[in-house]
View 1 (cartoon, rainbow, N blue to C red):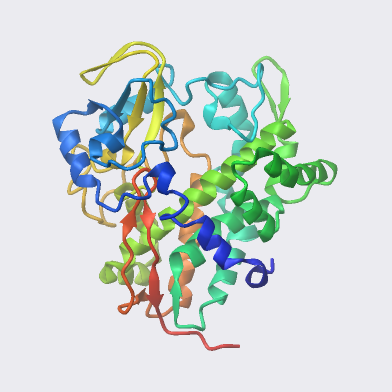
View 2: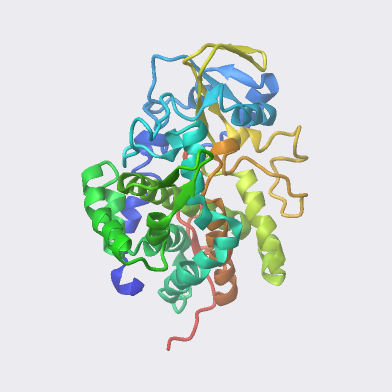
Length: 420
């Protein structure tokens, strides 16, 4: 991987600018702190009529991604108990209004396994999951994550200063995922830029999938083309090209779009608390709880939607069939009924599972890879950049966005490495 020559940093900044591309879609124009409003709403009732952005008081564009049904009744859940129940009851609270069944219709780059339900979803997930279990994290670290992290740090370690959010955090998941596909960096950014052009994405992925079917390698596409599962009826299943294309696009959009923001949130939380950063530097076993606490404290995706399949009484509210229930996991992750002092960032608190990666049958498939990227990335920064701290002469990072939250620039200074 020839990262420094291949990575177009200006293009990466444009593609991953929270204040640009996300503005119209996911509330990128929201610059406030939504948690006081969410605390008030949760204290008033676990479930409210309306969407999360309306109830939060944001009056920006209403055409958010994930809210494509303006004519349906919308409700929002804010308590941990309500979100937990919705995640567990997949029969009443479906992940898609019209789940895709591969027996009657194929997945395409315009939808994904997120739209599947029931047996088809379990079968498809079982085919792709083996590469994403905790035991495979070292495979990702050894083959792609460590090399990507070191090459990125090489580009600024001698400078004594850097902007970590885009130049570091954003690039890690993009290059990790595309590295596992065998896609060049230029092609990776082409895919990111072409997410609304399915044919363009197919043109890039199709020859790679075909080549791996002919000659497998030690990479993710090879694993997917060889995956086979025998179901309870004795029927063998393998992934079609369309299903592999769909899954690849899901990884590129979800994996590269969320992990970098969550890493930036975690780094910001640590850099704003020098004593906590020093404790993590001193004892690296504290890095894992620091990452888990950041996931709970400020998840980058604080809302997911579910679709109500039948009339139901839910935490004191009548939800009609066909309505949309938005799960405000940001509020649920700070529910005082589950966590003491929930607004505090405390890496010493007892670990309890949060909803940062969703829940239920559709819990994030790549969460262990995401954790590995954050652990290796932050650990390498602490190893190689002595005196790492926020740049006192630059504007400090701020959290912005509503349905996708993340940090603005993260300017830092440190003791520079000697140039070789």
